[in-house]
Length: 327
Ligand SMILES: C[S@@+](CC[C@H](N)C(=O)[O-])C[C@H]1O[C@@H](n2cnc3c(N)ncnc32)[C@H](O)[C@@H]1O
Image (cartoon, rainbow, N blue to C red; front, side, top):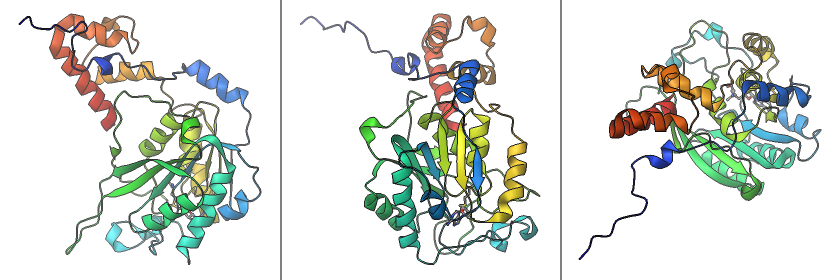
């Protein structure tokens, strides 16, 4: 019997090689979009529910909320191996976590646009309340991502907790904006926390990589992002650094100077990297000279690599993809 030959033979990794993000903006385009949409980038030192009640419906293009843990955590315990003098005073926990959660999530749902990605970070101990709040607010959970981090506390009679839940929610998933900037995206993110020795902080800063990932996949340059629990101002810093606008609230006034200092350390747009340029960086980090790879675009890189050394370079591209995810 004659063997059937496929018209388009299967090439391992071909889909990844030919991948293009839905949107990619040059630095100039991103800057222009940012400047065209004027916004009062600001942080209001107030209870987020009181603040949100004054905001119009459907205002924000994206929301990122990293609420207090609800575990009597002030970040000063010796178990966290920190100098308590570097942890800002005034961290407050919540009396009725379930009610509080329901209320702030319903306000977030009201002030987010239908197309908005709504990101909610939660530890496992209060996840039940958070999922209930999401349901009560009529939001849908699009992804239940796990962020795996380092610095888990040593435990004797249970497993050390080393993950958070980073939930992607939406009012209308079919209308939700989503810029798929990588071909293969998994819902487990391995991102380490940085050891910020000697820096003034509140005890639970998100790594910029986590916040930038949400911003990259969930917004366009010039978009307005809301964070009800600003903490150290990480969302504001990442927005400023990637040509996005921000508004936030933070109940602890002692965080004011820390947030201002963190914002002063970042220049507008300095964290923004167009997709095409990311490839140059990745190639360089793997010992390739991007200039010798010709005119780099996401479609030509794989072809050049393929022409040079066939299958081995497909494998190389696969490693590059994995490498990018790890960063
Ligand atoms: C987990 S931290 C956020 C950390 C932040 N994502 C960062 O990277 O620095 C939660 C923050 O919410 C603040 N907070 C607690 N209750 C609040 C409320 N009702 N309104 C606004 N902020 C509140 C706390 O003071 C704390 O700074």
